Image 1 (cartoon, rainbow, N blue to C red):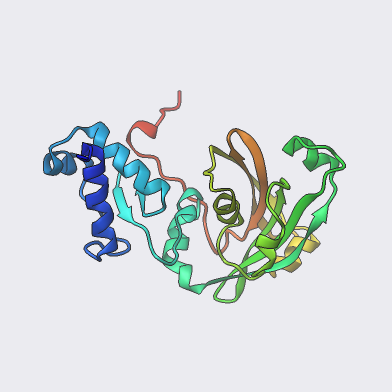
Image 2: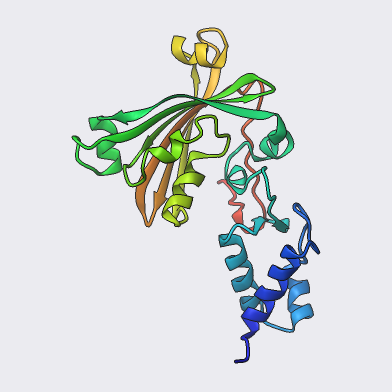
Length: 242
């Protein structure tokens, strides 16, 4: 059976990734260059790239192009945070430790996750370090649609908990919302981040959805004396203020 144009493009790029023609971090040809190379439409090229991206084989950066995913970190999830550039440069120096992981009951977070207030939520506290210095203190409130065991197997995992949730469910996030606040550290956060009480930190509340249902609430506190939160806008994403 003759392959479709899309399959020809997908298979060619896929095998180039597998046989080492492209190395992790390499930039692929632009969509326009691929249109000329494969003699197909932009729609066909984008469908092939979309599928390769969904499978984690490539990642795309707005305004920059498509790149070959690393076999090991830096991982694709880092690109969706305001600290992506830091993660990319410093990944080999980053470690993490789980402080607490357990089931809890919380009326507040049960309501947010749209489950019964008697339901048990997976609660997790973690600290991420750079060069052994605490950088990020994290709290997760996770809807009980995954087993707690996936986080217990290796409590020092560096990767994002969200990646483990998506991998277990074999589904991608449909939406992620972040709220950002500048606050001062209370005694507990100060102790976790090894700063003085009242030290300025960035509080980021991240709400992750699968099929438009909230599944993970990640509240994390970052030492911005070490890292700065940066968001880059390109082209059509730029909206002029009045």
